[in-house]
Amino acid sequence: MQRSFDFICATAALILLCPVLALIALAIKLEDGGAVFYAHPRLGRSFRPFGLLKFRSMIPQADRMGGPVTVARDPRITRVGGFLRKYKLDELPQFVNVIKGDIQLVGARPEFAANVERFRAQYEILLRDRPGITDPATLAYRHEEEMFGTGDLQEVYFSEILPRKLELSLHYARQRTFRSDLALIFKTILGICQRSPSLKEMPNGLPLVMEQRKPGTRA
Image (cartoon, rainbow, N blue to C red; front, side):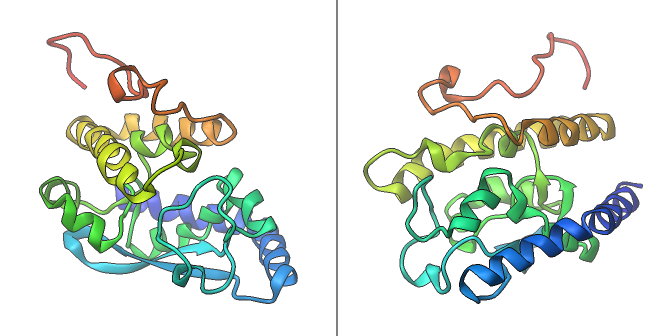
């Protein structure tokens, strides 16, 4: 049922958003003449590699000019790309990945192979299922590039942000239901325009994005 629900929703979204997708593609092409889409290499279910589709939001060959971690004012981000990233419009092509079965609507965000290997034990659990477009960690860190300050960006991501995201994703994976998935999709749509909390604003280092359940209650 879940796979059918994801397929129908993704197909409907692509059909309804066709005019928006066409305008975004035209804006990207007119800005610098480069490719409209970019396929990020990621690992999916059972560590199977696939290309995660996005509208290109950075200058051509940006991956050769720096690491995969980006900050809010990264000079590699184009003018159109900055707008797309702000409202998560660059993620819309991922509905194609949902239709293909690479990802699902709700699930832990797919990561680069190097990041997965660094946290292999956690991903051994998470990648028993397909990764997804959104989950509590995605919602909490929806504007994670704004959380970076100065210093080694890669180290901040590996030592602080990714471990917290994985903790949230693992917690949700253990108690998820179809109803909780629906609620999460709705919260994701509403939360696109909201600011993410900074690392210092998060109580005990973790954002409160899920309802706290009393002991003895069932999900």
